[in-house]
Amino acid sequence: MTKISKSDIKDMLAKAEHLVLTVHVSPDGDAIGSMAALYEYLIGQGKSVTMVVDDEVPSKFHFLSVTAYIKDVSQEASILDGLEQPDLVVVLDASTRERIGKVAAWCQTPILNIDHHISNSQFADYLYLDAEAAATGEILADLFMTWQAKVTPAMANALYLAMGTDSGFFKYSNTTAHTLQMGAYCLEKGAQPDLVSEQAEEITVKALEGMKEALQTVTFHKDGHVACMSIPYALMEKVQGQTDGFIEWIRHVDTVDIAILLKEKEPGQTRVSLRSKGADVNRVAAVFGGGGHIRAAGCSISLPLEEAKKKLLEAI
Amino acid sequence: MTKISKSDIKDMLAKAEHLVLTVHVSPDGDAIGSMAALYEYLIGQGKSVTMVVDDEVPSKFHFLSVTAYIKDVSQEASILDGLEQPDLVVVLDASTRERIGKVAAWCQTPILNIDHHISNSQFADYLYLDAEAAATGEILADLFMTWQAKVTPAMANALYLAMGTDSGFFKYSNTTAHTLQMGAYCLEKGAQPDLVSEQAEEITVKALEGMKEALQTVTFHKDGHVACMSIPYALMEKVQGQTDGFIEWIRHVDTVDIAILLKEKEPGQTRVSLRSKGADVNRVAAVFGGGGHIRAAGCSISLPLEEAKKKLLEAI
Image (cartoon, rainbow over all chains, first blue to last red; front, side, top):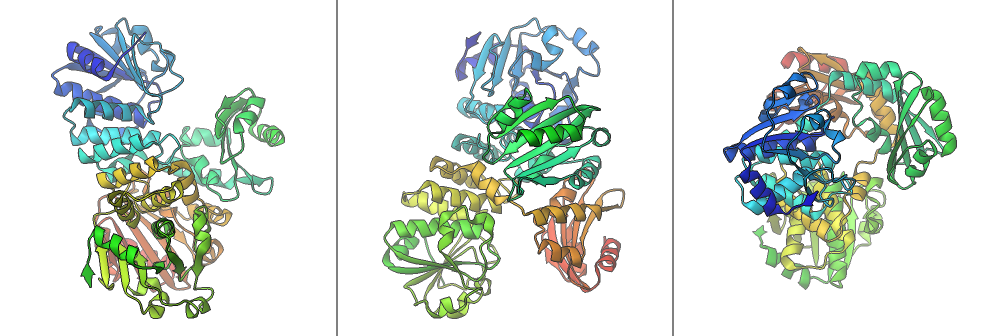
């Protein structure tokens, strides 16, 4: 593994004629936004570029028109069989080789990895890691600015999506002055914050129905300091796993310090997400073999939801 | 009315020894954050400063410690009787004299108005209006930067609150590159985005209970393009009018173009908020004597909630 500089990246991309871009499975706004922006940059440089992801691209990101060119190899693995090894594979926003799914086994080409996860396993041949960045999109915006690259409004929207989604629209503690400066750069280049945020926050009718049922399950404990929301297996099936943002509603309650979302992923298997405003939830998760950070952690408990909830409340 | 420059403001504040600061009734994050930041700046300049508001300061803004010094004259009108006329009254984020409530009748002193509302009535003796700014807090950040003023972390948090709340945390169309640059400036001065956003988005258990009931009322119309949420009078009483963010849940649904929130403020009196992703809801509101913008409008209908809803759907 070689750590490289900003200008090394520019040279490396300039030298390659054929490139493949990929991102982690379960792609989020940072993964898709970063890939869309880099794709358009490279096309503008006259390159032949293919985007592959071992997963579906969520429909809320389809407003970025170049996402139409992303090949979903989870549906059609034969796409990879027919894909020639390029000069360079660029892996964005993925911290391990496993995170790119079956693209890993296909890849026989040198990998350039651009990432912001401190946990990066240094799996790539060439690595540009900025763990201070709130998003991979922040790194790309900085690269484009440094290179004085042509950034179109579509690229600017893609980068604003990337930064906005990974920083909770500049609300999380990972937001720095530099994150906001790169946001300003995107707006100078024509990004539309209202369009981007509306798309990023889109939910389905199913998710709304799920929210309605999930709110019925909310319980408060320990003088209102702890709030639990439960998604039993039947409801998990109904919302097709779309529970993004559910925990926010109980976390925002003024009395609540610890917010807990319990999801019965399989009957008798409960996945727990913990969020806190002060208490160390990493310690709570650790009791059940899980982990995370002080204010955000998770664990899996091999018990039906109600029993898992009881054990968890005892542990707190 | 005299329009003044950035350096005029500095001189005017420097000359005044005793100042009163006030903001509009129903103070929001921009009003309170702007006042808190200016208060601390002036105290730092050795001034004698009194903050008065003709309303209660919402508890979610109490994390800004100087809010403890704000005098709520809606509770104790006698405070104004005992308050001497200062050298200068600074009115922040209010676009008309009426918007400062009973402070208007008390005030016999020249008024300096710093505001960002394009609808500003030019009521003040001295006006600094920047209608391009997303928030009054953005104007103040710009002034402090221009003046190279000492900005403490507490002032930076106050300004980040002001800008964050008025721009939907950099998601609304009023967000510009300058807004984000001023956000970056706040972070350089020590603002904590996670702390500020957590406080700004705090809700009460009552509001959560209200959300739960309000979600039960959601109906979809016109092939899912229109969604309605209803808050009948009994529920309005129960949530004590706290319905912030309720409309977002239906607006975010992928099929929805027009989101409608109907609130029965008094029995037989329905207040309607309309939000759209494309359709001109200003035209819909106008049918009922209301108005607003293409994508956000409102009206009042003198009918019980269900009848108002029927009329509204007919109009669409």
